[in-house]
Image (cartoon, rainbow, N blue to C red):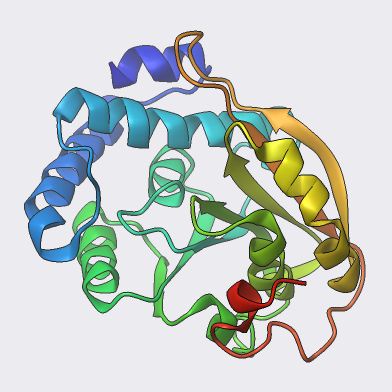
Amino acid sequence: MLVEAAERLRLHLDDATLDRFAHYRALLLDWNERAGLTTVTEPTEVERRHFAESLALLAALRDAGLLVEARPARLVDLGPGGGFPSVPMALAEPAIALTLVESQARRAAFLESLVRELGIEGARIVHARAEEAGHDPGLRGRADLVVARALAPMRVLVEYALPLLREGGVLAAQKGSRALEELEDARGAIEALSGESLDPLPMPLPSDAPPQKVLLVRLTGEVDARYPRRPGMPSKRPL
C-alpha cells in the first residue's frame, strides 16, 4: 500500500527506506499500549492513515515550493505523538532537520527511541509544552517550517507556532472539513502574531479519502515577546 501511495505522490522510496518504514510500524505498535500513540493499529491502516497521509503533506509542500528536494530545511513538529507527520516526511526527505516538541513524557520517550532506532541523524526531541518551546532561545525564531496535525484549533495553533518561525517561515497545518472556518476564526491571532495567511493547499489524497487542506501562515515580522502566553492560556483564551 505504501509503495503505491508513494508512486501516486511522485516520491521515490528505495528498499532501505521501506525497511525503515516497516521498522517504524513495528515500534509504533509495540509502544502503543504504553504510550497511547494511536487508535489505528491495523497495519494497512497505519500505512494509509499515518504514513501515506504524512507523505501527502510532504508532496503538497514540495509542489508549493515550500520544501525543495534535497535542500536542507529546519522543521518543527508540534505535538507529534507517534511522530506524525514529520517522521515519515524525514524518512522520505533526509535533508529535513527535525525537531519534535512533545509534552507527554511517554510519547517523548517513544520519539527518542524511534529516531534512534530509525537512524534519523540530527533529530531533536524536546519534552515541553508548545508554549514553553516558543520561549526557548534555541528554538524561537529558527524554524523554516512548523507542522502540526490535530493538535489545536487554528487560532490557538498560530500562537504556538509562529514564535518558532524565522521571518518568512511558514506554519503548515493539516485540517479537515472545517479548515476554512478555522482559518477565518484565526484572522485576529494571525494579525497579532505578525503573520499572513497564504492560499490553502489541497492535500493530494486518494479520491475515496475525506478531503483535507493544508492551511498556511507565513511570518512577516517579529513576534511580540509576550507570545506565546503562559501554558494553558492560548487554549483557554484564544486571541
